[in-house]
Amino acid sequence: MHNKHKDSGKHENKDHEHECNGCICDQLRKLQTQTEVDVFLSSGQVLEDVVFINFDRDNCCAFFSDPETEPGSTLIVDCQRIDAIRIEAD
Image (cartoon, rainbow, N blue to C red; front, top):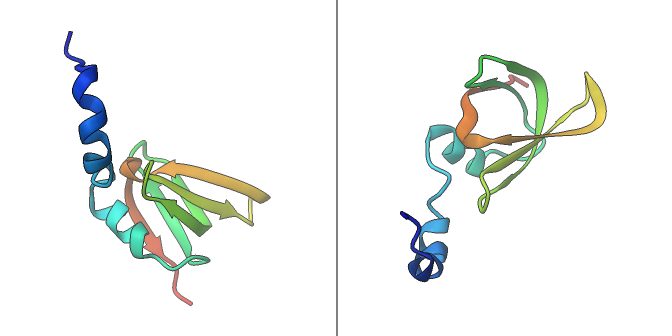
């Protein structure tokens, strides 16, 4: 067994803040809410003209709304599964 349950609690909080690694995760931490972006997922799918709502540093989830395709809906994406974002020009 590779899981050591005794030590997992000790390091969980310390390492937890460093879970969301990478360029895109760092950019989402700083991105202003309500910014319109295109999101390029590592699967090759593109989420066009979505609006950045929030970024949860604890679980790496980025939240976007899609007012064009699905008004009122929320997209939740793992920032580590995003290859690129395009910040829309004003």
